Length: 128
Image 1 (cartoon, rainbow, N blue to C red):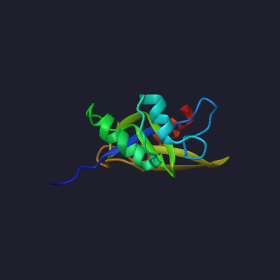
Image 2: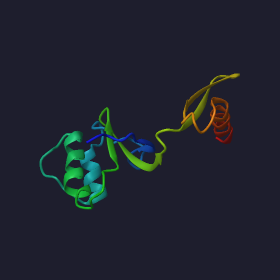
Image 3: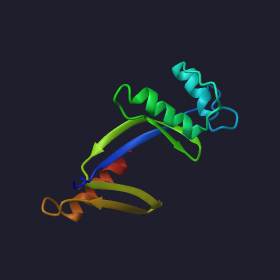
Image 4: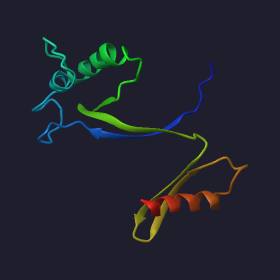
């Protein structure tokens, strides 16, 4: 079976305690978060990675949904927004310096020109 190209954009937010500290295993663990957020008490201590696996296996699979959680360098993030994008089209730009913009463009060249895509990228930069 051939894989299809896929392109998504997501916003992830670090999961923090009410005092703003991350669930990173220092003061608070992912296990603490699961206990408070989902009312699930796990008797034996688990690593943050094991806790994410537990959530995926025993909670998200039950609802037939992908887990919104990501563990990056032992810090817990939760997906708050996800957008499916056209894998054949991308027009993004960012400022490199005060007077220089760098653009990243992908498009089907039978339907548009580089100049049109660059214009879209810069317009989206101005909207932000």
